[in-house]
Structure formats: C-alpha cells, structure tokens
Length: 110
Image (cartoon, rainbow, N blue to C red; front, side):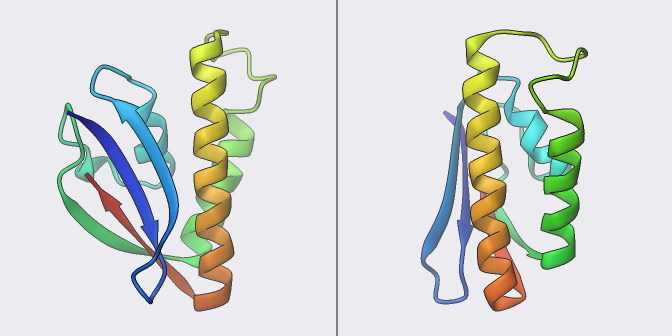
C-alpha cells in the first residue's frame, strides 16, 4: 500500500508521478497543495481522479514555493522531507507544463 499519484495529459499518457509509502505523512503535503484532501484515503489514495485547471496547478505551485521552500522554519529538517519536497515540486512542475499546453491536467490518486 502507498500513495501513487499520477498526472495525465489528454491523450492518457502519464506526465507526472509521485510515490509515498503508506506510512509517509509527507503525502499529505501534496494532497493539501492540490486542495485534494478528499482523495486521501489513509494508507493510499482513494482510487479516483480529478481534473485541475492551469490556475489550480499554479496556485498549488505558488503555495509550495511559500510553504515548502528549504528556508521554511516550520518544516522539520531531514533528508526524507527534502527528497519528498523535490518529488512534489517536480510533480507540480510537470503538471503545470501539461496544463499550460492543454488547459488542464488529470490527476489520479491511487
């Protein structure tokens, strides 16, 4: 079990991927940034997907930059979190790139 979060373009091709083990609370960061906490089913995602607009992905990326930057004193400092922050940033950037080209991106929460 775990959180496998995938971004898809309109052709159904995977363009972004984030993986968190079931005990990794950092998965919640990505769910919250996407305002998709309803898709968090505890030890994994809900198995559902939703579509995000360019604006929604931009807002998530802006929130990431404000809350998850390495200089944020409210976040714990450990290599585990730093690796997950990079994963979250890459996921959002890949989703944004697709949304800018196609006006939206679909995200599956597994």
